[in-house]
Image (tube, rainbow, N blue to C red; front, side):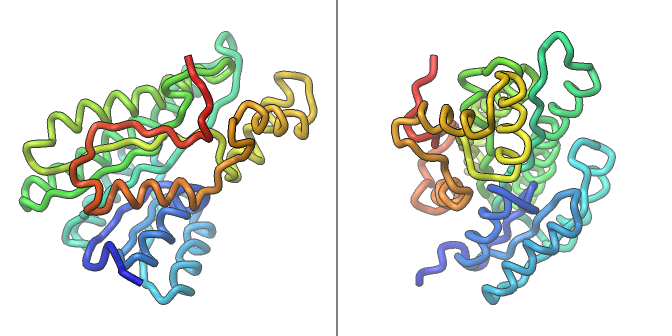
Length: 262
């Protein structure tokens, strides 16, 4: 099998589960050296185990992505040890389902901290390094379809994902002269721990319905009548990081089964 990413180093946030874990596995299998970041050491080690089972080596760093101070401590360490990052994949996400009138400033700031401010800070570190080394690379940010079509009871989450899309498009224009591409992936519903243990139960509570009914509604609103798997999203990320996407930048690509949005 052709290994698309041999000799490349990828840094992935949110690599302990869901789309981040799937992206880490995909990149490792395709030849990249993979570094993952997250808060849960046990789950990060689990991801490492899956990668090592496939004959690859990797590394992980514990980091609270809601803390700029923690990011400022950890990322220079990564850059020093890795001697450069070719790909940055910002996958970390913090959900928040709550009535707007009841959302606290602390919850708003935390949601933006993980979902958007961490993308800003990580990208700034990596971009500076790429420009200094004259080694252009690629950035892929995982946003969401709610960043394009905000949903009720998700004001902070929707706004943070919309901010990622705007940041992606702005950066793509600013960094094009350096040969750095920046794109976003906008998944709809994905079969992740976040969906199953947080979003579906939360929506069931808001709509005074059963979790089974919520799941039916989600699938029913999807023309393909399915929920995406993390590995499917990872394949789109892989394409955007590959040489086949060298002429693609500034895009926010939906992967949602064809759901219509206003």
